[in-house]
Length: 338
Image 1 (cartoon, rainbow, N blue to C red):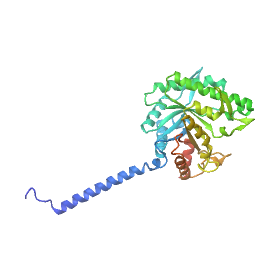
Image 2: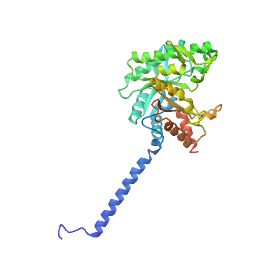
Image 3: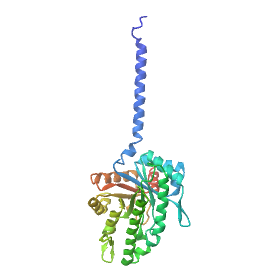
Image 4: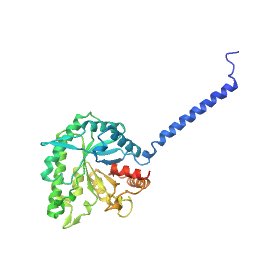
């Protein structure tokens, strides 16, 4: 047979069929890979924060718990976590619990494009009598962070301080004025601590959505600090890199909506070239069920979050949305599977 003669027709048809099957398999694999990321892409934008509070030790103290958390974040588009730092106190020194586990979490999260801020919060931790103690906790965090490899560290300290639940705030306007002044003084000291220690961590905090609405003579959040008299939220925005606003509502546009309740903070952020994040609630709240997505479907939640980002996508002061919290999000998605 001539070596250059054509291949038999049957062999050609077999080869052609094999090529078609390979192409089909390849296309199916690519489609499956793309579909696995659909949930993430429809909820988040790479240019905006989509953050989530993570409070419990059990959610971060084992490899399995961490992997479950990070898988959840990837599946739903979360790119920022606020992880509560748990401490043991020895004399006047704080020892951070789970240092190796935290280092692993930060490194693994970074590999997935997720940044982590260290979370701390207590309603009275900024009062003058507790400031040294709270700053000692910050020192312990800085020590841990600086022991971790560059590029695999906490990117910020995130304070969730809610002084209005304490008795000094409720005792009257004069007492509240002291509480507000203490809070602002603490943020100044925290910033100074970060600077003095050479830390690159940002300073962020959470506030309720109603500070700006407190203007009555005997019930207000107007305070004089560093020679300026203005609303507490404005002072806080001056002192922190960004704020999270607990703008908990089930709808994001219209009357009494998330967008309405963040409007003043957004306007002030634009005026000082800083940013804010709105927030949504997901845990069960028996007394105020109308402000949480608990009991709603995942689709209802994600539709509102997407609409929130769309509504403010062109606002340079809008940094994204924070979700409270991991437990609530697990419950929200578990309900849809019941």
